[in-house]
Length: 89
Image (cartoon, rainbow, N blue to C red):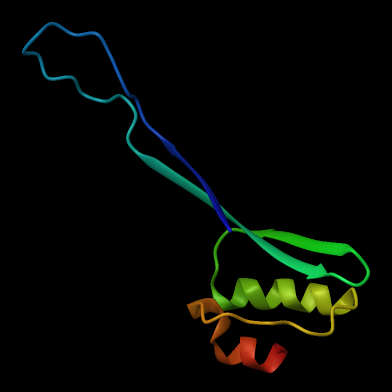
């Protein structure tokens, strides 16, 4: 799941015909939430990552495996198809 923020100025007062320049440029900030659910025990594992690259996802999976998560179901997202991801599955 991606959560993000786009900062921008929406409306300003200016005389008619005068071009208004934004003082703040667009700034994109994203964070990604990785979730694992154990429906039998009712436990939820979650980790925030700055991106969805294979290296970041692999770190999260290794942490979950250390906590006892044994099975991971991957979808076909690009970060889930790397060599390192396949070794962890």
